[in-house]
Image 1 (cartoon, rainbow, N blue to C red):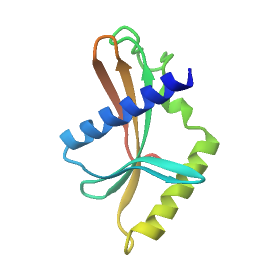
Image 2 (cartoon, one colour):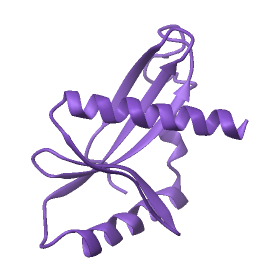
Image 3 (cartoon, rainbow, N blue to C red):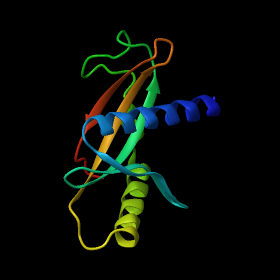
Amino acid sequence: MRETTTTTGRLGEAVAADFLRRHGYRIIGTNYRRPYGEIDIIARKDSLVFIEVKAVSCRIPDDIPKEGSDAHRPEENVGTAKRERLRRITETYLSSEVDGDPAWRFDLLCVYLDQARGEARIKWLDNIII
């Protein structure tokens, strides 16, 4: 089970990075890790963007439910403890890797993967509060 989750996560991050590039973002880094957390993708367009990627494997389009009845809501996997780790790792990156006080935001990309069909859909939640 863990290997499947890891594989789905890595594929979701690759799909997300490609999606961001197609939307004009420059990927600065991926998997920025510290002992207390990780940022999946760091990108730049008009501002610095920290991106958490949540991927789920499901059938598309059948299993992409309508708003309010979503059984596969990857964004629900960002609970209080995860938000705290994201806050801490973001602060670490800003203080140790960036000069000055740049404009920045935090986004969540929910990646729905239909690996059997080779399809993906992305729900982009931008400028979320962590």
